Image 1 (cartoon, rainbow, N blue to C red):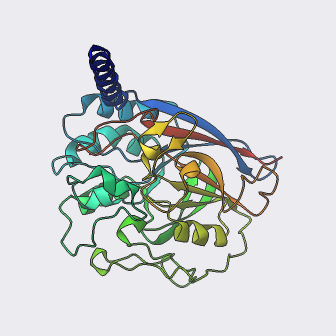
Image 2 (cartoon, rainbow, N blue to C red; image 1 turned 60 degrees about the vertical axis):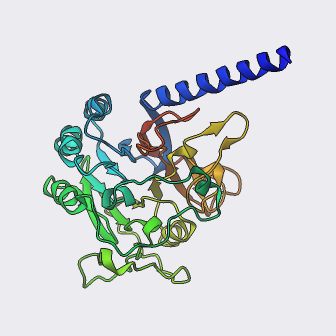
Length: 333
């Protein structure tokens, strides 16, 4: 009996230590650096900073300072893949955090569910379901997504919410395409229409899920285009398929938190969408192997950022540090 008590006590101590570390890890902000051989042969490098899933609350001073410091990297382009806020009072501190990046570099963005709706308490077991989303709601957003989008657009960043656009970074033209949050079924993949404003924008109240069977024939690449970049908050398979079929060179996504809890030799437990667990974070190919690996010649580069935050109702990470990603795009061999 005494031995059993000691084992129980030791187990409780280990669990307590694990929880304490998992809470601490949410503050161990990390910059990941990845190289993507995606540019035309002979092209000089292009540096893209990918920021995602900040889930900012007003009191997170350390996170705010860290985000501000990312401008010191002098990226050529910044891409924000959404879920910036986790509190109704987060807009002002968020804009303070992003201010140096908004000034320092051209950028592009899409929204995530936690730009529209404040997080709520959930049963963690939901994330083990095939579809962990809450029932679809018709309530109006309660976070200042419109004000956030206006501030970023006013700084010159491109809003890719179901839109196409272009940006010039380091003197080179980048063709952009993006969708509004697939996790909320707001994605409507923009077809090419030379007579329109590079694509449409969804109405948040419309809940317009794109047709997964619809295909957009890839356009002939303009010789002036250095890169075709696709952006989504959540890497749902239907969206990745559309972006691949659209002929993009690189897809950037967030949302997964890298699984948030990862186990040694197993990896992410969940992705909170229908992408597979091994693509929960990092640099991959879609739909097959990486384009620089055997069998990956027909794949598109896919980079998933594990993000820098958590829901305030689940402030833990394990073996999955909060991150931003600096991508160095290099010439293909």
